[in-house]
Each structure stands twice: as structure tokens, then as C-alpha cells.
Length: 358
Ligand code: NAD
Ligand code: MG
Image (cartoon, rainbow, N blue to C red; front, top):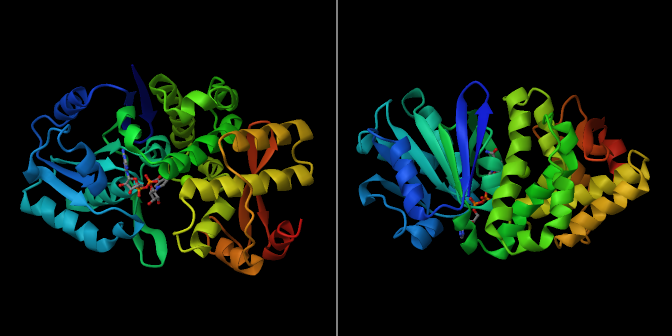
């Protein structure tokens, strides 16, 4: 099965979501890069698992070690140097195969090499399939600051093949599901033209999703990306609407930072952030009891739990104040305000502090 989505921002491009054979994937990548020289940046783990099934020559491959700390300027320079060494010109292309780390660094390299060359995303984690491969944000990190160097740069195409998900471990799969669930809570604020009923789809389809049933996976990724595309089409560079994608992320980011990125995966931290803000919105009568219960049940169904461990609230607030989305001395939260709808609120650090006392 194959689904195709189209992104219509500054640059138009296609996203293909399928469970096609790897042979077909090779063929499609070859067609999309016909006549071009290629630099294929591939995550080491994916390289080891899939090299024999992906038909590339050793000369065009750059193997990127795994882990967030590899999304750094040293690897960025190595990718650029390799591109130069194999003679990539402005007419050529870079391809990222891997999770968000490979996608972000390759996208950044492609956007800056010779002032920008074509770039193709082949996301292999659930998180990169439903989120990072689409939308055009590219980045590398500094040692103590994530994603501070980056560009908005749209890919030429995105090939999502659900067969890659078979080897994804539970932790990484759950991380992707954290982002998937986020879309259910924001659906009606994304400006998508027709209802997708993602909340209901995820509620009813939990078992099939947890088993990674191929057709359900394709549909689920398609729904999530349709919502992301609807947002990106209206707000490519994060002027306004794109903030809704940050539901659960204000606390999520702070939790990732306070634990130095080695306790929670991104999706897990976002799930804690969603629990927190949904409960707060209910306590403050932004949402009613019925939706509050349904929301809790959805998160629980997928095995997510509210955060038990207590962190120092002053430290969390300090981190939230440093968030890129904080402004004018206030912290931005995306809160649920109705069924599947969210809105932005800004709180002073003192007001935000009260949130943790409830
Ligand atoms: P990741 O790229 O680190 O991948 C997670 C792990 O899964 C790695 O060890 C990787 O080798 C392994 N892996 C990848 N594919 C696999 C497969 N098919 N089978 C088995 N193992 C596999 O992490 P991620 O969660 O994919 O992405 C996180 C990154 O994405 C962060 O750097 C984050 O900042 C970025 N991100 C970017 C955007 C954006 O809009 N650009 C959005 C969200 C996240
Ligand atoms: Mg996220």
C-alpha cells in the first residue's frame, strides 16, 4: 500500500508513505536522483541492519554514529568535506537515512553546502516519520544547547517505508508514539480541511498500532503528517500557528534538559508534558471532565503515565524561561481548551510556579 501527501509551502514536495519492498524503495530513490551525484548520510545502526537491502555504493555513503551528541558541528563539517571530496556540485543531492539526528544534520549540511543543494529524507524511526522529516527544520547542537544552529530548508522528497519500523526497539517506538498522541489533542487547531478523527483512530486502533500492523501504521503516519502539513503550509517559519505542534513540549523540553537528555526519550518527555498540561487545563476549567477522562485514558492505553519523580520546580521554570518559545519574560504553554483544540497562554514564572503546586 502506498499513500502520497503533498506539501505546498515555498517549495512543493511529495511525501510517500508505504510498506513497499526495499527493492522498490531503492528504485524510487534512484529515479528521484537520476543523473545526480549523491551523498547518503546513514545512521550507523540503520547501516548495519539494512545495508545489504539498500542498494548503494560504498563511495556515496557517510556512516553517522548514533546518538544526539553526534548532531554536532564536527560531523557537520565531515559531511561537507565528504561532499566536496566526492565532487558534489550544486546540481547534486544529499540523502538522509535514519532517525531525526541523521535527518536534521543532513538537512543542515544540504542547506549550506554550496548555498543549498537538494536533499531527500528517508526517515527510519517513528518519530522522524511523523515529525522531523517533514516541515523543513534542520539543525545541529552545541554541547549544551540543542538545535541552536539550523535553517528552514524543505526536502525535495520524503520516502517513508514502514518496513524500517520492524527493528525499532520499544523505547524508540514509544518515543514516536508520544508525538503521534500529541497530534490527536491538537487536530482541530491545525486548520486541516476535513476531520481525520485521529483521537478516535488511536483509541480504537491501539492494539494494531502496538503490533505495528503495516496498513494501520501507514494510515497513522498519514494522519499525523496531514496535520503537520496543514500547519506548515500555513506557517512555514513558525510565525504563529506552528506553535500548536508544541503541545506538551514546554515541560517536555525542560524535563529532557534537567535530566541531561539521558533519562527520557523525547516522546516520553512530551507525554509527561501532555499529562501535566491536560490536568492543569481541567483544574482551571478550560476543558470538561468527559474530555479530561478520555484524554487520560488515551495516554494510559499506550502505556504512558503521569510523572512521579519530583524535580525542583525553580529549576524547571528557569529552563522553561530559556525555551526558544518564551518571550517578554513569560513562558508559553499550549493548553487544551476544548475537545481536540488547543490555544496558547503565556504565564509569568511566578504563575507557572503555581502550576507545580496543584
Ligand atoms: P535518533 O535519530 O537518535 O534515532 C533513535 C535511535 O534509533 C538511534 O540509535 C538510531 O540509530 C536508531 N534507529 C533509527 N532507525 C532505526 C530502525 N529502523 N531500527 C532500529 N533502530 C533504528 O532519534 P529520533 O527520535 O528519530 O530523532 C530525534 C532527533 O530529531 C532529535 O535530534 C530532535 O531534535 C530531532 N527532531 C527534529 C525535528 C524537526 O522538525 N527537524 C522534529 C522533532 C525532532
Ligand atoms: Mg517534538
